[in-house]
Image (cartoon, rainbow, N blue to C red; front, side):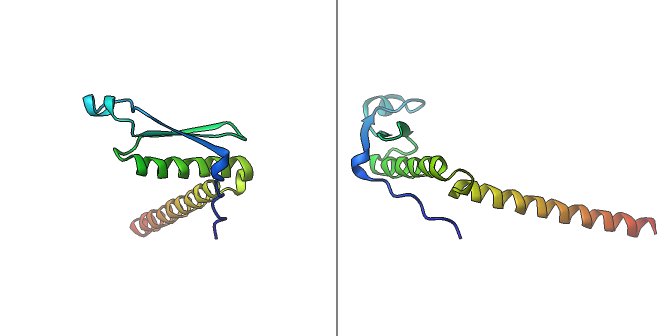
Amino acid sequence: ALPPRPKIVETDITESFLKGSGPGGQKINKTSSAVQIKHIPTGIVVKSQETRSRELNRKFARQLLAEKLDQLENGDQSRTAIKTGRARAKKASASKKARRKYKKLAEEQEG
């Protein structure tokens, strides 16, 4: 099982709303829907402007901050490290299985 996500203490963060950047024209230039969160104890800054909704961007920014804090605190035992390790092992197993399959087919065709 994966370790739990670290809890973010509201008093440890500062949150600001910014105008987004990138494509979107006049709408993105005049609405402050991008969210920037700074974790004061560590100094980690996270920005999210994935959606047009301020609330969804707040949610995404907090998830991103939680992941970064988890990586900082737990290193190789963090949720993201465990997930990537599992995905890597699954991909290696699948490619090994495919190699076995084609090797067996090649042997059958020869013999």
